[in-house]
Each structure stands twice: as C-alpha cells, then as structure tokens.
Image (cartoon, rainbow, N blue to C red; front, side, top):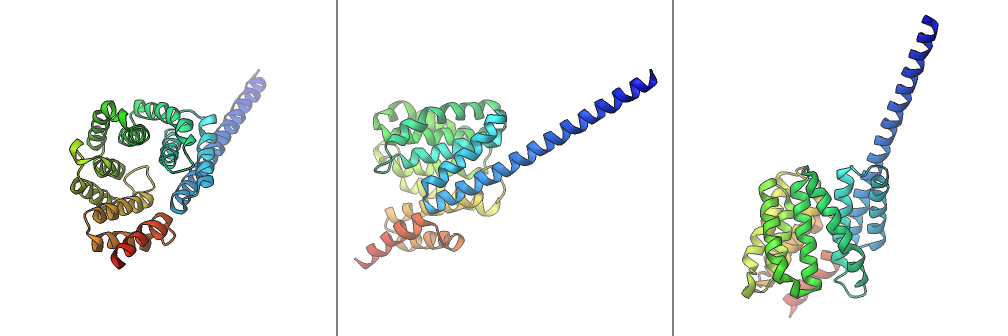
Length: 263
C-alpha cells in the first residue's frame, strides 16, 4: 500500500513539474511575442510601414488567441488598431477604417472594464472616437463631449500618461476655433507629453520612445501653424536626434518648414 502511495505521489509531483514547466514556457513565449509586437509597432510607425504594423497585430493576436485575459497584449492590439484608423485617413487607405473601427471600440471597452490600464484604455478610446470624427465630421456633435470626458478620466487615472496629452493636443489642433479648438492649447498639451516622456521614460505601457517622437512631431506642427518656424524646426530636429529614420519628420514635416523659410 505504501508503495502504491509512493508511486502516486511521484506521479502527482511529476505532473505538477511538467505543468509548471509548460506554464513557464508559455509565459516565455508570450514575452517573446509581446517584445516582437512592440518592436514591429515601433519600427512600423517610425518607417511608416503598413506591413510591419500588420505583423505587430499578428504577434498580439497570437497571444490573445491562447490567453484572452492578457491585458498587455490587448493594449498592444488596440494601439495598432488605432494606428490603422489613422492610416485610413490617408488617400488609398479608406477601407482600413471599416476594417478596424468596430473591433477597436470593442477591444478598448474590454481594456477599460479590466480597470488595470484605465488611463491607457480611455486615452486610446478617445483617439478612436477622434478618428471617427475625422472620417465623419457630423459625428462630432455626439462624440466631442465623450472624448473630453474620456481624456479627463484618463488624466485623473494616470497624470503621467503621455498619450492623454497627445490625443488632447491633436483634438485642439484639428478642431476649428469656433468649436473649441486652440493652437495654444495644443502646444501646451504636446509640451506636457514631451516633458512626461523626458521625466518618466518607463511610466506607461506605450513605448515611451515612440510617444516622445510623436509628441515632438505634433509640437513642431503646432508651432508651424502659428508661424514659429524656429521652434518647429527645433522640435523636428530633436525628434531626428532621437531617431534619424523617423520618416514623417525627415521626409514630410521638416522639408515643409524649410521650403516655407526659403519662400
């Protein structure tokens, strides 16, 4: 009898060891996929590469297929979907909006309900609604107040989340003055995002280096709007000093400023 119990104990311990090893292996695999997703996302945004963005989506999707409760992967997925919505505003990419809008809303709601990444989820949802307004301006009537509420909640939940200030800055930048837009407010929000990235490099789920680049690019555009070309060039050159291959600044924004100066 003791021999039977001994063999049973050994079997149980062996099974526990195998299960723990499998769990450890799965976590390692998830970490690899997360890191790969983040790398593809960053490179895609720096180089403006849609294929890399799709690959990032694929990495996060693999994790969520095995573990729907992985909030970091869910955040990464929503972040990429939001970027596809941005791409949909460019000529030739119109179909991307219908492809990703509904799923981004559902996924953002899931992240917010989980409560752990409340600021990140609400900031991204605000950005998603902002893309809806850009796609369909009449929707501003119902969505503008929602966006403001979401951003206020996001800032309260985490005052050191740069995405909150980037999205609010974009909204102030793109909204006509008659309806509450303000380039000065946009400059203030982009500057806050820059400062957060400089002082708290590891404060959020966002790849802080990308948030830093994006906030500098938008800050430069806001300065250019009020004809402060020196400040705009400084912001752009600072972005390029961080990432020399940042195509949005390198090939579009900075040359535009230099052309205006020549004229």
